[in-house]
Length: 279
Image 1 (tube, helix red, strand yellow):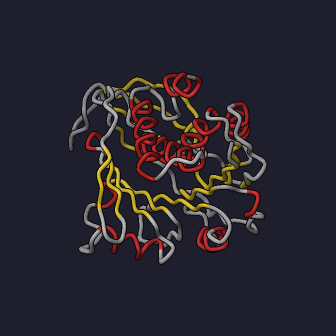
Image 2 (cartoon, rainbow, N blue to C red):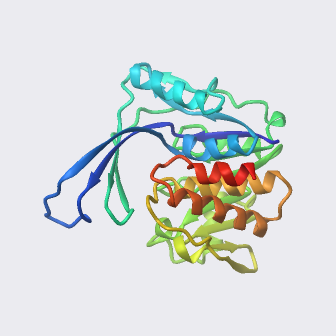
């Protein structure tokens, strides 16, 4: 069992199921799929809890009923929420617009500014994963690198993410830079970067290092809902690395976790992953 700290969002997702794929200027009918727990904190953390790791989440929610619900749901799932901050504004819903082919469009309000407090004692953590725009993340990561494994998800902008392992999707990389993937990764993660992983859906994932590129095939799955697949991939990767697997073996494990994620109609991991881990 590893001690894992996640710096990531905790969301209340509102699901809108459309009757057909989105088109410019179209009109659509939808069914309200209700609320569900989501965000990178839940989507990544729950699978790691099922894998018997201790998982704590650093995030921010409102001081309202939705915020209370989010904390209760995450705690019930086994995530340590004592580091989650509360802000004065409402915890607004994230709108997930789902189409019959499993694709989704996310519509969210502007988040309140989230400033991290003083960093924790890093010696008590085996790994930390950054997937948040919280202010102070860079300084946290730089101090963490001296003491534990640091992983980060590529941000939607060009903000730095100091880390040992940087993760991105091929979609996130499109149009970003004319540099090679490894050189681009260095501009984001800095000289501490050991591995840059770029996922590509059904085509698997690519591992970039200073002098090499290797592909790891995806796990075949029936796609029902792609929401949370990247978060599940990160969780599987963290699980592999903190249980002694090498980077390629950890990427294979991450692919298995992502395969279970896309095959379930939720963003948090489904029962298939739980059964896999129990077996």
